[in-house]
Image (cartoon, rainbow, N blue to C red; front, side, top):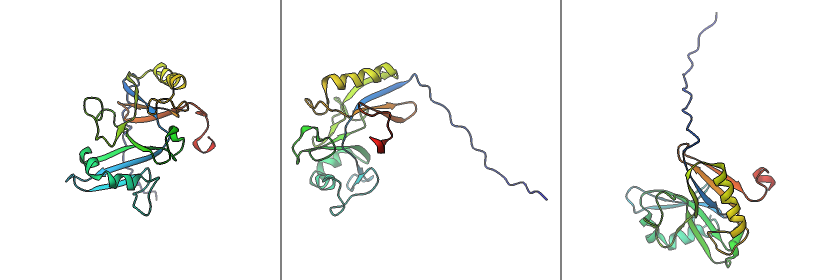
Length: 186
């Protein structure tokens, strides 16, 4: 005898329209980092892309830097604040001395010229904001090739761009070198 097993219905999600707002920023070659501030705005946790950090288990000095800048970082407010920890001794280095590192926030909608982040942080450079267009992506890549990094002016080996598609709430990246190769083969 066959028994009918109930199967939960799963709705196919709505597909966002491609011709919507996007933000193209410079992709900085460092290490992913995050600051988490609790709802009370007084407790801070520091993380990398995949784990929480401590003094003993740091990531290129990001935890130490965050603790030294704790009071200023609390000005970011409650929530998760993702960004790139980059500079001397991390990945490309961007021509900075070994001890000089920077934290650039990803949320360009929250942190901008009208609402600057705390002075210990910067924001990834916005290269384009407007309706998604592959030409805008290619023009942004060519601007980096021609002028170098906007995050570290004068550094002529920028990594690429990140395209944030607002309607899809999704990030995409395109690199200047070996973009067609999987990450492990670059």
